[in-house]
Image (cartoon, rainbow, N blue to C red; front, side, top):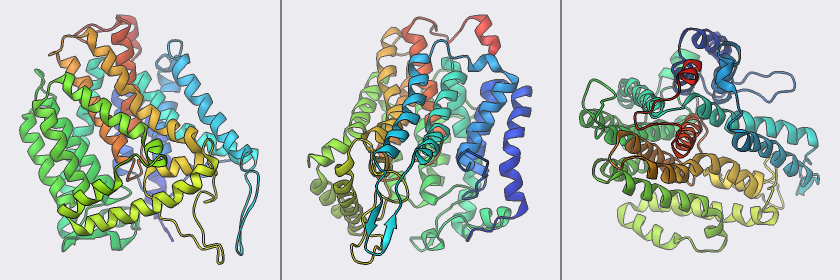
Length: 467
């Protein structure tokens, strides 16, 4: 049982008023990036704020609410939506409507041995819809409003890298001593202690929900830093290659084979391929993620081939992957019974022992979580916002010089989002930074496509002042 200290509860509560203060003192993007990235990296995990009517707010929803309220009270012009009603407005509507339809199609109780899984009501659908808006639509919307130019996109990538650099000493210290920072600061450990040990040492958790989250964030930053080393204008006062090396060392200390693989594959792509080729690779990865439910349902995804390759690399990892595929196949079989709107909440999407009612499912991947709970509608409401901007960016850069910094920035961001989409197949995303970035990339892509942004990333003075 989680027993947070007073400081943990205070930190979660003060983030919203802090957002109002910072939004009043700084530009909207600077305050938004600090609140979003800083909150994900350092706020306490597992605890929530329970308010009437609203769903419980955890660290990931609190950061979005802090940015939104700060903008609403201090910079309301930033939130004007005249030019994005067809995108974000429909997205918010679909988030709520999809949850309500899931509730309406799950009004039956499930009797599993001695266990009864309760039916869903309209109120449950309303709460799930609000949760979807806080978790997905709101950070995407905020990214779309706060990131307006290529320079804004550059600043956001810089903020992600700075966050990773701050984490470097934390990773090295916890990797050597043991994960202790979250417990020392907030009074409790945020996960299962058995998951901290790897390869005769420890994996760093710092203030994130899991060591894999730390590792993947570091891998993302390593890949981004490799890409920005090719820009004419440096983001930081040290070279991109030295930055990549520092982050890669900390990534090795994370002891995650998957995250290390992402960086080993992604960094050379950033270093050597043209922006056009990077965007092409991003589109292919995005298509793999977007079509994954169908390739699995139709048995088109090469599971056996992938397992054989993993056996050659590491039999232990291959065994872990085979176990994951087995669980996913069982969950997919059940998800197919209510394919469009899913099984809803209360764990109704899981497989159970028909005699004892015991849970038989281990759920890891974001794709099967969303497909089982919300059906195809729920799946695309999560994967769509992350991956669709990749295709918008690919179309928009045709109007930019192929070797411009703006084109490269959009390609780097697209590849970052593609890796997030691919990683959501074996793992869960659970945090809003990729959605914030995706909203920003879609905003920049739209402005380039409409001829509202020049190669220098300039925007009309009146709109710039609103930021």
